[in-house]
Image 1: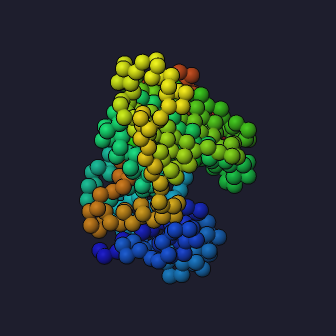
Image 2: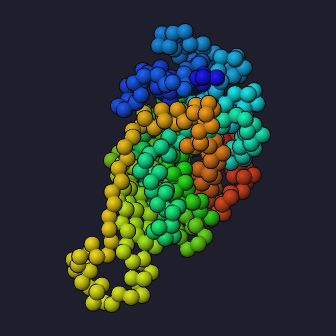
Image 3: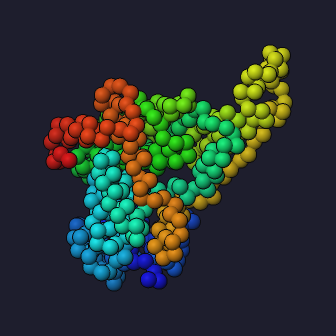
Length: 394
């Protein structure tokens, strides 16, 4: 194989974007202007006749299927990407891998950890095939560098993490686009499964998984929906460190600010574009036991902060279209050359675990432990699907 033929299951907004990337038709600033040398558009699949007509015009000559299983077994594709409602990601990945086809699942990996675990376990039986997830924000050089700094231990251990990520404003018209949106049975939830999975992944990718979670959620806050769209989380890492994660979809101005406090300083990220790393010249623990009140007084009255800490600024250099194209290219490079994956598919369970724990804590009204009780979570989710009355339980 000299080039990976990718089949796209679901040619909506996201699937269409991938098709444009692969054919050099993307209009996003910074997106690749030409076709890749490693991956190409092999086939398309959607159940909507109108989509089929548009694809015939925009991607002439590309095979089109209305049955995704037929596309997987057609011999026209070497790999597939699943740009479909979240519940279907594990089912489609398992089927593809079971038929010798590489699988790239879009985020999130699934809705509940039990189905994602089944997908991971099946993928592990197919080591000759590539299994990845579209965590495109892991390509952000800023977050890659911060992960390196934290993992190196040069700034000591994490004491506290805080992420306010409210830059997801969605008006009612957004939710009214499709009947499955913002439903327990069709989408599997709200902001935690749709808008925030990238940040949930980055949070644990850089800072590790908490041991316990307690949450406060408002369902349908300022919107005519039943699912989560205003979430506040307190995390306990089990080693004295804590964290806070706040997200919603009704803040039209929005905020994206991450702060990570460590023994040896602090990291502040604004808008996922720029980070400032403050490195203390002495760890806070040393300052705490050695500084006199006179020294403290001089510092708070405007003393020379350069005697206390240094600063480093890190900028993100890529963009939204570039990130997705990078993951697609990396996926193909792993298939063809064995290049390490930016986001192995098995990593997807961590963000789903966090989302499940956050929702379960809210439903039960108490702190819950991680790993989450998978059977209990699914039972509670099914209660809400049944009460909704639109879709069968899982």
